[in-house]
Amino acid sequence: MLSLLMTTEYAPAEDRYELQQMLIHIAGGEHEALAELYRRTRTAVYGLALSYLKNAHDAQDLTQDVYVQVWDCAGQYRPTGSPMGWLLTVCRNLCLMRLRREEHHAALSEAEWDALPAQECGLDADERLLLQHALASLADGERRIVLLHAVTGLKHREIAALLELSLPTVLSKYHRALKKMRAYVEGDGAK
Image (spheres, rainbow, N blue to C red):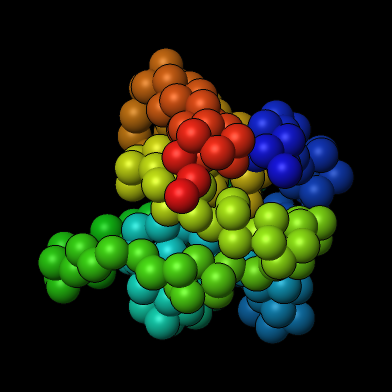
C-alpha cells in the first residue's frame, strides 16, 4: 500500500509532451484539448486543492476555477517548464488567494478524504480507509507533500518549487510522513 506513495517516476517524456500540446491547443481555443486536460489531471488538481482547502465542496469548486483559469491563461505557459507543475501552480495560487480571502482553516473530515477518487489505486475499501486515517494523522505540510507526490506524481524538486520550500525540507517532511504512516498502518498509531 505504501509503495504507491514511494514511487519516484511519473510523467514519461511522452506524457509531458502530450500535456504541453494540450496547453498549446487550449491557448488556440480548442475546447476538446481542455476537456482532455481536465480528464487527465483533475484528480491531481483536486487532491492539491483539498489539501489546502480541507473542504470537499470548496476543493471541487476551486478545481473548476483552475480549468477556467487555464482556459484564460494557457497562452502564458512556456513549454520549457513542466506542464503539470504549471497547472498545479495555478491551483496553488487560487487556493492561497481563497484562503486569504476567507481565512478558512477547518479540519478535514473522513467523508472529505473519501471524495478523493479511488481510481487506479488498487486498494480495497478497508485499505483505503486505513490509508485515509494514516494521511489524516499527518501535519498539513506533510500531508500536502505526500499527496503531491502520490496523487500528482510530482518529483520532490518540483514539489519544493511549487510549495516554495527547500528540497531538503521537502525530502525530510516526506520521509518523516512515510515513517508516521508506516507506524500507523503497522498498528502503532491505529486504535
